[in-house]
Length: 305
Image (tube, rainbow, N blue to C red; front, side, top):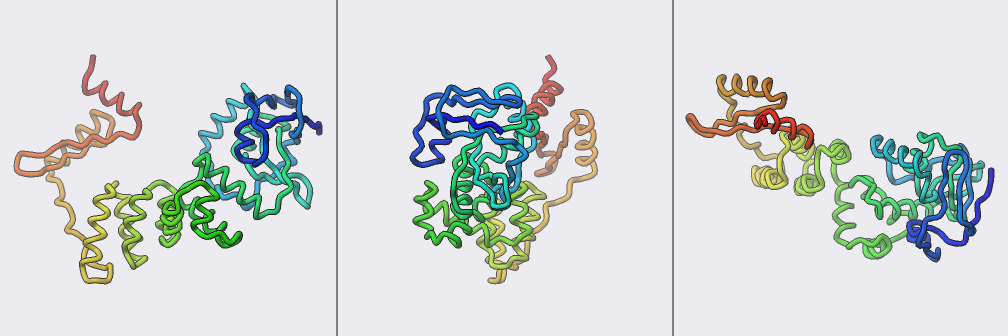
């Protein structure tokens, strides 16, 4: 294992580590098995197998596509921003910041990575990891809320002091913490992106967990807007006063001719088509797409040049 020293840290790292002097140029770059530097101190080149992810990492989900993109960048440019680690009692180093870079560096085939070693307690390491993820907007809403709750429980922050610490409004902290009141199944839907933050906040207006789960399933299945969910919640609350009011009447089923037309259009366009009948001999078509590429292909079929 070799050691690389330099006098200044990159801007990104200086923002994470108070007191570090920012440099206008991130001059350390790890490529392949080695690193190039322009001199200075504060960095070490660590064997990648000596670096271990933290079990306290607030971020639990990683986008495999984005990691692969970063790996391609590292193959071409190296690791521009160093990892931040702490020494483990059992040997090696524990990640504080940079797990996505560490994962991508492994895919890129690097055997060593540049890192800054910090002598901090586990709770302080978690706080640093939390702040770094928040600054990068890398956490999903439930991970963010869970991290806030841990900082409050373990470090004794109030919502006001925590908001100042992480650079957020107090109302942002409050709204995030409210998500932890959701039933586990609904929290999982939020993590998966099937239920948005707006939907979740509307569902919190219900008192019954069973009703929250039932309506969340309906939201995910029907791709309802936040306004529709808010109306649904109001009807549930007004139904019999306990959040278990009668659900709205189901939508009328399409006629046989509408279903046949939708099937034929779906086959012709290669996309899901819905025929919505609003009155006799009247209605509209809904053509669903899931990406801009799919939309371009649909336009090409509908408007051939």
